[in-house]
Image 1 (tube, rainbow, N blue to C red):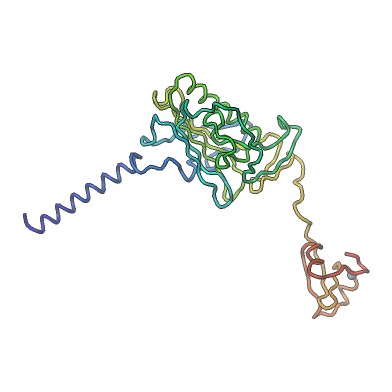
Image 2 (spheres, rainbow, N blue to C red):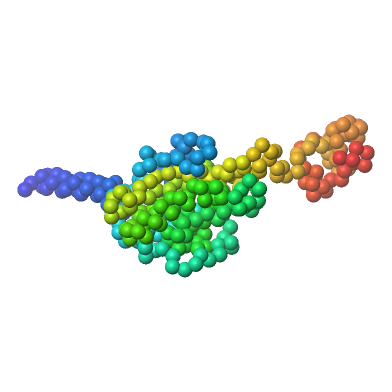
Length: 297
Ligand SMILES: [Zn+2]
């Protein structure tokens, strides 16, 4: 064979190998990590909360790849991100993973955005639960901080629990396996998830027993939530003030006195000593300023 032909042949073989590797990878047969880094659901495509605890995603069809189907039980949790937030948790749930011991205390875990508060309109009073991504009854995880998020009582009980019960019942009855994935969905740098995407597929019967793909709202009827911080307040009531309100003052940079803009001392002040300031009184005093004795700002 001529040298040129050998080169062409070698290139052709290489091309076939590359194409094959690409196909296997894209089809999910090799190199597929069990953990996804981002949730599949796009918040822009989720309708706003309207009083139903969840909505179907992708026509309720879970998006597991063929390579993820297995009859070996496992559970994988994402490391917390820079903001201390949980990521995707996935498992292949089998009877061998299910808890055999009583649930232990998880009260020492403080998930991102955790702010304890009680409301009379919430079942059990507490707005937030330490909400398991993969329910305790499925994998027996107790105080695993990679599996606990700040979730409303409503999301926990009305939204997630029925799906967890469905999977538990199925696995116990059949001793089959269920692929299971829960993805917390955050908006930007929010500390509290807007909701969770829950996906499940029974393996041995290829989804005949269990198959769903839903987005569960992290909402609580009657309560408004600031997802950026976890702060909350009753619907229809004013949001509580976070900091001292900002006020305008006139500073005398020479005498280190501060005045209200309406004070005579403010208008008679030498121009070179006069400075306008907007901010908190506390900060000014911390900077060494004293309130004027006339206008008493
Ligand atoms: Zn004054």
